[in-house]
Amino acid sequence: PPAPSPLMLGSDPATYVLSRLAALPSAADLEPALLVLPVDLVAVLLGFLADALDRPAACDVELCARASACALRLHRRAVAAHAPLRRPLRKLRTALRARLDAERALFGENLAACRVAALRSAGEGRDEGGD
Image (tube, rainbow, N blue to C red; front, top):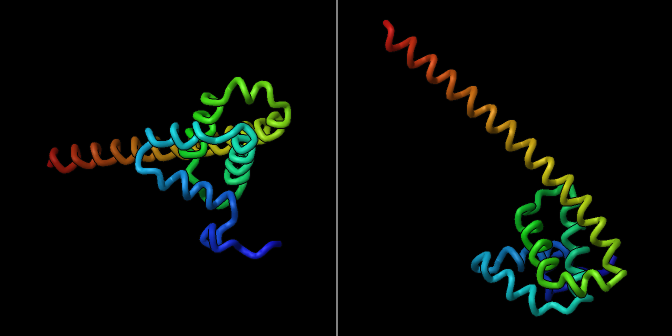
């Protein structure tokens, strides 16, 4: 593998792109940042996002979903006409669905645990108040 580039702070390209997207001051700044990308770099960005989602290490799933949706919304005509983008799009769709399903499952487990904790604390409160 090539040596890490000092320009990318010693990280791999996908991690560096995600860190730069996360460093944007607000969500509103994401659209102008993606608007200036040419179509061939949109393909590269989507590939980086798919690679980041495929990794077992935690990444910001919401940021990846927002960035991919925004890039596709901004460049939809060019993406539809650009046949080489189909493969990264399929990979991104599969990776994003898998990670979002995992996040939904985790959210459901946490919500159920909160409900159980609330029921237990309400039950304990009734027991203490009834003495």
